[in-house]
Length: 249
Image (cartoon, rainbow, N blue to C red):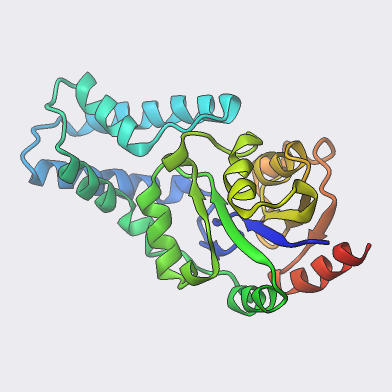
């Protein structure tokens, strides 16, 4: 019987037309960050800063995909400024700068069709609900959750930037299953990404559901045929009936 459902966030509970095409929005985000730092008094060469920041994000992204450890945006920004010989930002400036960095992307995200209907149905059926999100900034995720009015459904909400590890590391699922007091076979992971959500659930011995509504991206194409989901749905509204079927099977 399924007693708990864990959800990914991006492209699962919320979506953006550019959610898997960061090249379309990163130039704007990085310029917003640079302008915020400059307005705070940092004398930064525009091209050196942007090139180094981009290079560090690429390097750490490759590394986080292989070691499943999170490298946060705060860490990357502090490292970039240090390498440029700039003074370390204060905690308040760092937080404000990262809010400026993510502000444009946050304006593009919307609740996934059927999300509130689905979550209310799952709650009514007695399911416990949680979020586990791979993301480089905890504040960014928390704002997306609040903007979509999702917080009231979920406890706990786990963000890789806050805990230091990423899906598919099975240890991140223990941060939900432990407090819930549930066994892996009593829980399901719902997400759009084969290499993080589905593989992570399988490592953790949980049920898995691949949401394909916005799953047509390169990361999934690379894993098709090697990571096989146990269940697939094309929209969130299919989930309550599916979980009923798993519970009775």
